[in-house]
Image (cartoon, rainbow, N blue to C red; front, side, top):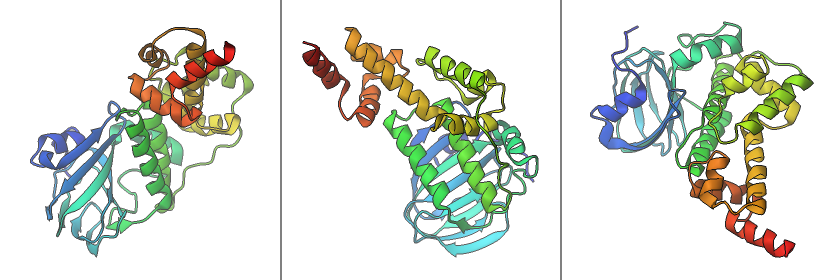
Length: 299
């Protein structure tokens, strides 16, 4: 085990000799980081870093050799193969041809408590059993694809609510592969807790509210709250918050002359373009066309 010399995987990649290969970076303030890189075949060794790093090979066909924390491996990567790099371990890796990667890094300082809570303390980042070479998980691959798509939809902004929920989903998949699944949560929210959380979400539509803050309203840990909310409401907290934002956006479009950019700010989006993308996805019509259609209908 080596003491990390750099504060995070994202910082190291952005500030080291690897920076020219960085094509995209999305970060929600330290909860997780998403990076996309395009690199030539070369040495990929890196220093010890305090992050768990999950990497997806978007192209495949490369020979990958080295050690990412679980012993030496030498394999030919397949398209969408996943690799997990242990925190606080100096990787020694090489790839023999051009490759395109997407990387998700989870700072262990942000996630150890959550991992303990979700597994009853049975798993640590040091003893996950999948640090040696490539593995495949349709569930994790789907989670990564969905997370990346949602980030693109919202101009690269990863909300704190989305980041924490996505991190839990991916950690759950990693723990299943390590044969130590997350503990199960039974039952939904108590009626009073459910009402308090829903009222909080309505009152704070314009804010980047976190999973931790919502869980505190229900007096639950974030891990248990996430699952109990979905059981009670039928959708995740993030999906429910989006529903509330779309309802409020419709009200403002119908009842006020606020500009689209002002409405975007009122319901928690960074620009009119982001609101338009989300609105069209949910309503199959643009905010401007919706406003015009409502006013024609009301005469």
